[in-house]
Image (cartoon, rainbow, N blue to C red; front, side):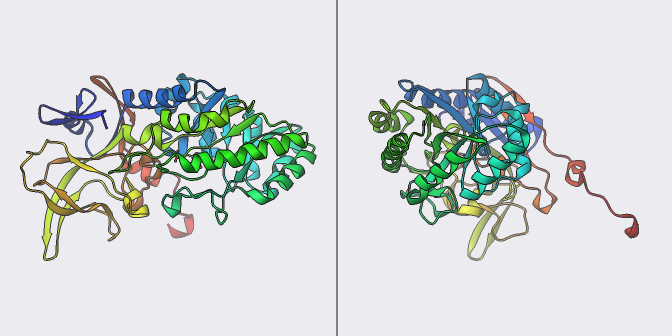
Length: 420
Ligand SMILES: *Cc1c(COP(=O)(O)O)cnc(C)c1O
């Protein structure tokens, strides 16, 4: 996690001490490294430089406007999963002809918005959706470019909540039914079938599931071409994992080495939708210790960030490394503690039984690998204002989202007259 390093005993993001940000903007806050984001984006794009490709950043991983703009400036497209994400992407200046739209439950309204915006394609997930997209396109007098999301039925060997490419998954069209679905789509008056989409899961730490999926998709491309369907795009989705603890996922370059032989002569433009691998380790959530507490069976560190700020530990039992902002002595004793937040739920924890050096009220901790699925999954549970977001650039930082205020918590709520 080279963007966060100890210098002179203090954890820095690039050249900025996290303590300084904590003093100036308060805690908790998300902190992202500009250099880290740029480096990971480039590594991904350069790995596939030898084939025609478009990277559509999966913005659900981190949808802050500044971060979107950064990737858009680097030539990226965007993978969206809702009308709200379309709104953000356009606001950040995304080129609609580089936006792809996935998701199992697109509403007619969302489909219409995306058609009007002129997106690159819909990644359609079911036969019913094919008909709805066709229908909405007809009403608007447009032709909808579509890729069908097929489910290559490979096991990504990841957490079951984030495996999406298995037969029993709610996502995509079963591989065995794909040919028939493409035939149906081809007959629709207001659709143009331009590609195949797949996304087999998230936090995948090996090349092999991607290789297996690609093999099956290449066969499908050839079958479809034999039936006169011009497949121009093959979208391999996202899902490349990162190191949270001791995983060693392939680098993008290694993934490319495994995939390129089957990609090179296919005559399509490849689309990738990386999310986590670009932003995950470029961000941390910084929080202040409020209290320490020793119960008979367990020691707790109560911090000012909670499950509403970072849901992954509660939601997936995910491991997020915790680094004290003041560098601990190498020989300081490590004692297992639960790092918990102020939310009134036993499931509110950021770490369990984590060996940490002695920490006390006022000390700062950084919850690492929090750049992806961190802020975007945050809520206002317990009426907690959502945290600030900070982008560090060298020795400067920018507040890219203000900490929410109490007014934000009640925006849009009204008490009807009869209750007054
Ligand atoms: C979530 C998602 C991604 C990104 O997944 P990561 O694991 O963050 O790379 C890409 N494509 C689709 C369709 C998704 O739903």
